[in-house]
Amino acid sequence: FWALGFHQGSLQYNKTADLIDTVEGYLKNGYMFDTIWTDIMYMFNYIDFTVDPIRFSEAKAYIVATLQHGNRHVVSILNSGISLFPTDKGLDLYKLGNEKDVFIKSTKFPLEKDGNLIAIVRPGLTAFVDFFADKAFDFWSQGLDA
Image 1: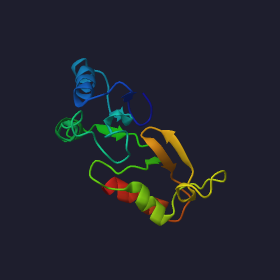
Image 2: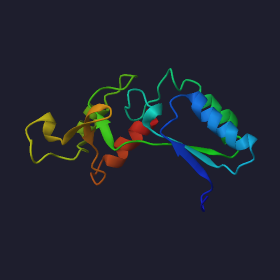
Image 3: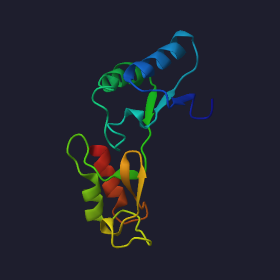
Image 4: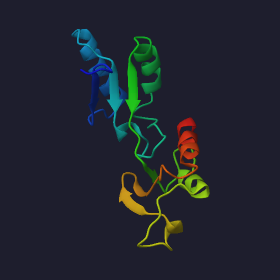
């Protein structure tokens, strides 16, 4: 418990039912509970700004019906790494970020992958946002609105 309330988070929330079981357990037992954090398991193929349409298909309805109406909150973790692959809805965030020149540049391989620093992390080949870049805020906002 801290100044912003009691927060609960886990890497073990692999589907909406896991979130529901945790929240309902806290509420049923009368524990103070304000916010639940979801790690990257909620994403589709671990791609930022997506939600897995199968494992988390009921998450939005539950969040609105139960958590928000109970004045509780959800924090969904996002990674700073952007996949080189399009989202499940066809949005190519890598292309968009490249056009806005928001990725950290590679000094070791400046002629590969548009000069961007690329690493292999979830979700695979990934570029990293330079949050000091002029258009980084606009890029990140577009992802959140997607």
